[in-house]
Amino acid sequence: MLPNGNNGKDLEAEASSEDEANGADLEPTFVYDGRSVSQTLEALDKMRTQRHFCDVVLRGRDGDFEIYAHRCVLAAASPYLFGLLAERPTSKEVDNGVVYELDGVGFERRALEVLVDFAYTAR
Image (cartoon, rainbow, N blue to C red; front, top):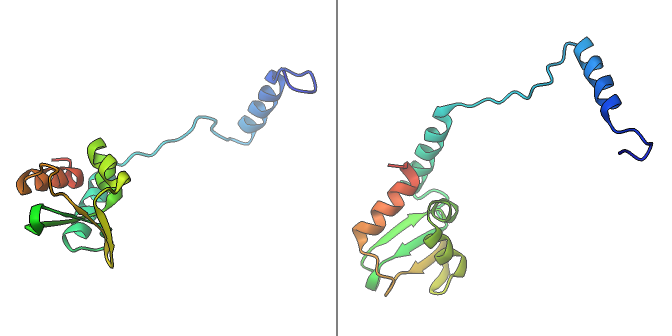
């Protein structure tokens, strides 16, 4: 019930007939382009491989490997990585982002590469 005692139905009817008279379509219109999602992932992956806008470096045991990425992409792709990136227990700030040391975390290089690749390609 509205403050003026109207239940809102009269207002809806008025708006409806007014919109119809003006030729307005009351149904929401949604546009979906299936290519947009894959194009976005492709663009993000290209930025990652060229190290554009990367704000995180995942560094393996003893610094034997580094994987550059975007925190938001990794966090969106994996609850585990979200937790790792949110907590920042073994990280340090550097010029190009944050380096996360993965010593003792248990990731082998190839396993982490596959996980990060999946985050960027969905394949």
